[in-house]
Length: 419
Image 1 (spheres, one colour):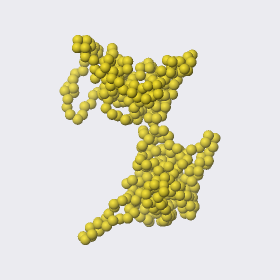
Image 2: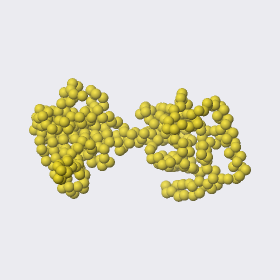
Image 3: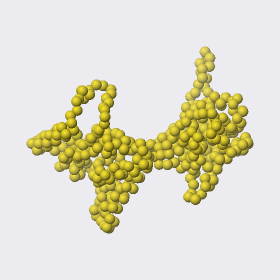
Image 4: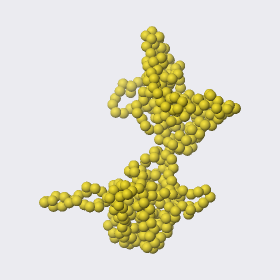
């Protein structure tokens, strides 16, 4: 990338702590034009960072809310222009400031906005206008924040060995904003900016009060699924009163299901309905992941694999997952399974039926019933526990849950079913 700095303002922030009541001050050190920047020590420090920032990719709907790099959009009321947003106007002033004084004035206003946030750390804050040749005449605006690094020392002499460096800065934990967002080289989104902040404290994005960030993709997918569920309920209970007992019970059951971190198969929809719903979700994000566990055995693929390469079914009272493909791949240790000459599917199903019949016969002969520890919800949503000693627990190979019995053999996995 052919980048050239047009203007750059350098500020130093002093802060005695992270609380809003602590003393915070800032000082404008200098504003450089392009020629001054070329001969300054900042050039070697920042040139590589500008390129890395421009090339770093970000998703409008990220995989989670904690990703370091996001796309922000200026908030605009329907029927209004971008110029109705004060944050947008400030960045535009920085872009079109053709004198050092005008640029320094706009940069100073941005720093004062940043100083009003709840948590401000001491360090250097740099505002730069950088042109990308040969694509655009107007520059990009970069806002860079380098926090002071504690416990930094340099080698001195044989007597003292080291000497401490005060107010040292590093690009290692650099926080930054790039405006406008360039999703592809040569393509601009005037209403979007790209922001990067690796820490969990979100104060660096908080000072842009009129910028919003889209929901992460798991929330987007969940919202779409719940919309489909609501349409399903309306169609199913069409002609019934909203307070119909059966409808209320099913709605409550689906609410508990949707709120759970670990969920079971609901057995509500037919295969064709699931295929249709999956197709609509793939339109939102083509590379949606699908993952689940059958009694602790993990299965992971793409949502588009459902119905084509990954199939869910039932063999008598047990669940079955079928995965089809052209080749197997093994790693990390040799196992005898790698030497298998697979049987035809019909033979495998027959063997599964025989195993199920044998297991059922053993239960009848021994009378052994496995107890499971249950959690049930009362009408107010409170949880209570009981032992389902009169229910047969699901077998490790995937026995279907019946009645109030439920077995959760999966290990702890906080990741949602869609990334």
